[in-house]
Image (tube, rainbow, N blue to C red; front, side, top):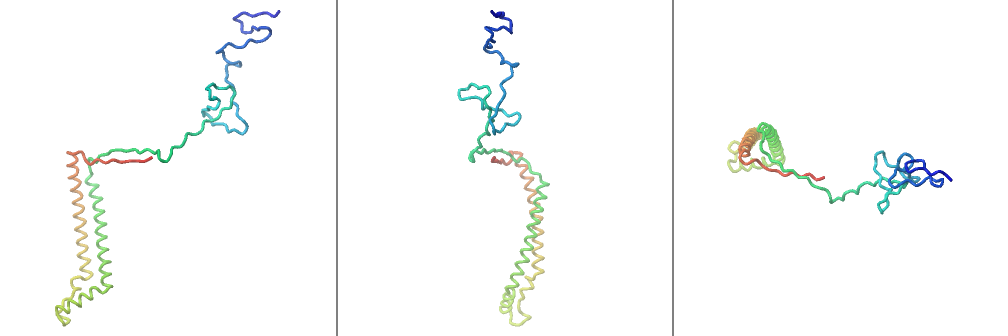
Length: 204
């Protein structure tokens, strides 16, 4: 009859067979888990990727079952984008920056006025408007060549350009000064009221 080992001996056998391990005991082989197996042709997940393909619908993991990498999360629909809003308040305006910007803008406006006046005068002159007006004024004011009123003495190209350049210079000075003064006035008003409040929105 084969010897029967004591309860504390790990090498005891019963009837020549090794008894089954008690519940909760580590698996044979040092307590290592079952190796992960993959079917032929199945891509293996990257290192560090969690897999959850060895758990059946019942919730009990099956040892040795193939683990499949979890699929990517479902993409959000086109109507699920969120909008971030920020409420800002303009409490101070730098007068020096306002003066520089207003000077450049007023200078551009002055140049546009001069170019527009030159193009308009050349267009009217090519259409014969000044000649017709001059002839009409001469017929009204006098019949001879010396007694009539010559319109070109007042609306000649040189005089028109001089007058337009003067208007452009006044425009540059006035717009720059008024814009800088407006910046000082706004800063004084913002000190009492808190400034103009803006709401900015950014859509993802």
